[in-house]
Image 1 (cartoon, rainbow, N blue to C red):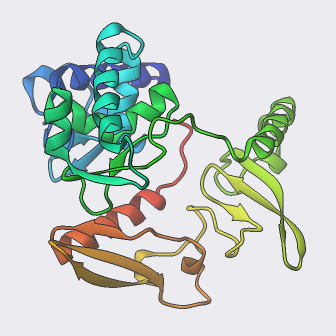
Image 2 (spheres, rainbow, N blue to C red):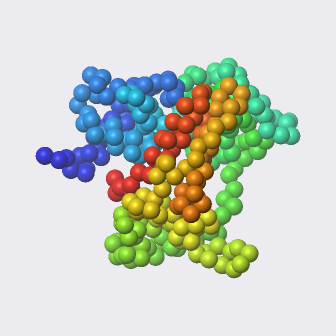
Image 3 (cartoon, rainbow, N blue to C red):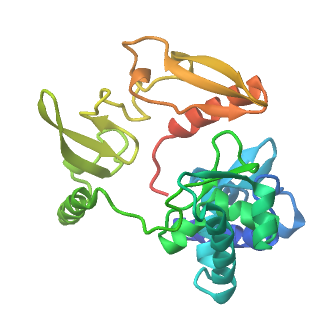
Length: 305
């Protein structure tokens, strides 16, 4: 007998809570969880898959790990982000980073170990906070982050660190709010506001200007895009959606790691419109595997859950 949607939701959230408590102040990048652990005996195996689908966990081999998104979502649900403990830690992290940028005219790179030494914070918690941009999420301030390709080693502190975020697209967002209210008044299953293949809801519609005039771009939650600047993007359920084989992978060795790039093998293929970002790994194979995982995540069919 299959479980109800509400039961599955509650079970997945219970798992998220258990994992967050078990993690404590350990770093998310190297703390593995095993679904066979007796501590999770009452949890449905499918709940692990639910959290992976939501981008809250990632699976490597038979083990599961928190993603930055998963850790920050769990903290907001179960860690009391407005409580004195979290606020004190955020303050200590912010001060340590701000002291390093004070009086500088440009961004600053520092070793992650220096951040933990200056702040006095548990290294695992500090890693997770930087990885998930917790200062930005809780305080709405310009945040620091990892130097590209140096996750966990080098922290880049921008010169505008700690300043309030400015919404450069406030007018456009206001228009999107109006659109959202309009959509809510429409029938939920209206074809105009649903992907014709998977029924994913409309997420964005707005005009944009270019050198030849004005066009309208329409995007759905499944990724289907009509009127995109680089061409229409098919739904992931569309037979025209590219396969991984439609990309040519190139790699580049830099420093102690490798970068992988994916480009459409055929200019007429929809792969040219489904863009994949560069990936990084300690080895060439690891960088390629990261690219395969990125594509697999992008190609997942939209689900209501």
